[in-house]
Length: 393
Ligand SMILES: *Cc1c(COP(=O)(O)O)cnc(C)c1O
Image (tube, rainbow, N blue to C red; front, side, top):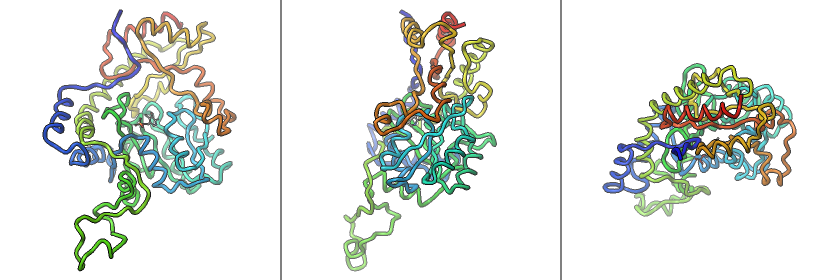
């Protein structure tokens, strides 16, 4: 049997291992210096003022909704083609996600449809655009709509660390949004095991996120609320801390942050390799009638997180199940990103339907993600291409 080719995976080298071992041997396991070093490194990389790292981007998304003031009954607009964590974060706040259809070429929110959705939803308080597969959404247009309708923006950049907008600025710089967030799950651009990072240029949001990450307890820079308990004869009591709002334990460890810092150094070469692999796939599938790669003319600026093709399975005379299974027989693993959120039983139970999401539904019928990761070798990629072509013309 040939070696297993997953659809995505992380890459760890001896520098990463050394960075982690160094923490285990010498440092705090959690809440030491590495957390801040990692935050500073990412903030600098994307050119944002502030960064706050979390135990996951799901945790980050939850407190991002809180930090922009999402409350019970509010509506938050997002894409139906995303991971469940995106809209779940809004449900955590007892607010209501609203799904607006995608653009068939980019698989990102369609801006024209978004405007119609906004007109129909006067209770909307925020938009969460998802940079699908690392291709930035049309943020200039989305942010101008947000201004017009008085909405906040959280960019879900789980796929998009290292991506840049058309004007060259980095995703994460928050020039078009209040908050941007990244994920460091092992299939994402860089890995910390679990982990996520928020960037923002807003000091109030930044300080709020720091408290929300750790139980809502005051940070050193915060004014203490109860002066009587906090001071004795005008001097601060050394034991004293206070919980000022309801927060969580969404902290990440120093062990993970040390890994993140080490991984971040390799990001440029990760991105370069992904781009090369994507171009090889594009070349190999160009001109084929039943396979159309998404985002094919938009590789510049993308972090190329996934390699998604749309296959007309009916015309190709094979079902997606048969196709995926015959690849699995060759030890090649593919995945579907994503089933529209509204099709999940839980969302169905909340009353969501697929109406007005025709493009998302059609996309779901046809999409499949082929293996794409830094350590995918030329010969393994050729194997994938050959087997795909064997089944689909
Ligand atoms: C991975 C992912 C998340 C969640 O990130 P975690 O760090 O795994 O919690 C959210 N949104 C999208 C689009 C993702 O791909």
